[in-house]
Image 1 (cartoon, one colour):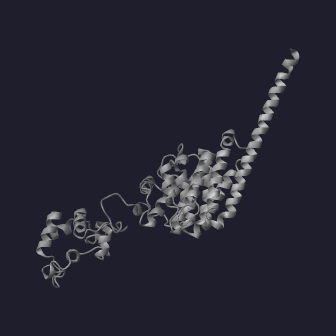
Image 2 (image 1 turned 180 degrees about the vertical axis):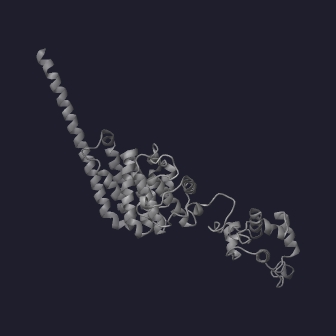
Image 3 (image 1 turned 30 degrees about the vertical axis):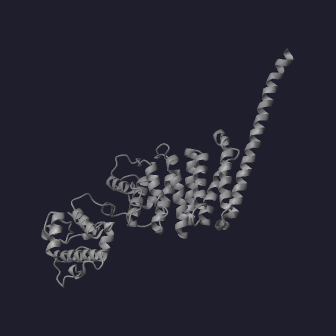
Amino acid sequence: MGRRLSNFAVGCLQVTPTAKFGSMLGLMGSTTEEEFKQVLRHLETLTLQRSAGKLGKLLGEHFPTEQGATNQCSSDFAKSLQRACGADLDGIFRRLPLDRNGRADLLRVFGMSSAPKDEKSGEKSSLADACADMPVDYIERAIDLPRVTSSMLEVSTEHLSSNEVAQDWTCDVLALNTLRSSLALGCSDHQDECWRPKVDATLIKATSVRCGSKRPALSKCALRMLAELAECEGASAANVWDDAAGTAFSGCLQAIRATKLTARMAEETLTLVAKRVAKEAGLFTAVKELTGCIDAESQSKVPQAPVVVGGLRAVRTLLDGLGANADQQQMSHVQEIADLTTGACDSVLETRRLAAAFAEARATKQSAASQSAASRSRTCTKSDIDSSSISSTRSPTKSEG
């Protein structure tokens, strides 16, 4: 019934989304039956005003926008409403979602907010109800969070899987803290004390998109969880960081852009994520995704130097890994990595608005050039050693001949 009433209202005013219609009516909460009839009367008035506004003076006084001081709908409007909803005014009110006081929950009908936490229904508990004991704030250490149950974990995972930031940021904080607790402490009702939920690309992406929130508590929770995911070894599925690298890097950089309160934490998380991606997906993939994010920021309409600086520092951290202990696979991509880094640095240096990032760009570019030169030197040295070994091996054979 709520959906039919909502569709009828949208048809009357031609307004979408429905939440905008609720604002036009000035809805602030649940209504009694008498107040509900006043809301419908107001809807009729707005409908007449809209029609008169579109038709101008064509209808004149034969299409009035007010019908006296009565709070009752006209008979024509009531009949149209009955045809659309399949019930009269009393029947519509009785079939709408009600709160525990017997009032019509019009906020829920028109999508203006979720149901309040203290309202009860026969459906499965909402996230707020299921995680009522979880703090709605940033907690630095996950082990300090309350232990959760499997049902709490299920509700939170379902909430985060949408990859869309909730209108009520506290719901995201509850879900993130619940996941953090389960990763650190497991579930209290699970038979295996060592069990931990699997970390997949969907979870990493869902966490990353919340890092850029302008709500410091939500941004910090998301960044901390992303860092904990990057440090989580045993519960990660295969190839998750390869699939989620770009979204994770972008989330950290957006956190630097969003607020100064989380900038330092975002840079630290970005470094941890970059190292994990390099370990799981390879150094080339990590640098490719990072430089792609830096290029995107440089070419945006309003690029921000702190965002670029944070990305370049992470790239330099990865380049430091190309030392003497670099494996053969990493060495084979050194020139490609250097080219990607140089290209990103040049893009920064060509953007005047990023003047504050020029020093970091030059330092990173120099680091890439040094690593590339060192790689060529090590390759030449290795070739000389191999040639000498081959010559020394063949010499006795020639002398014997």
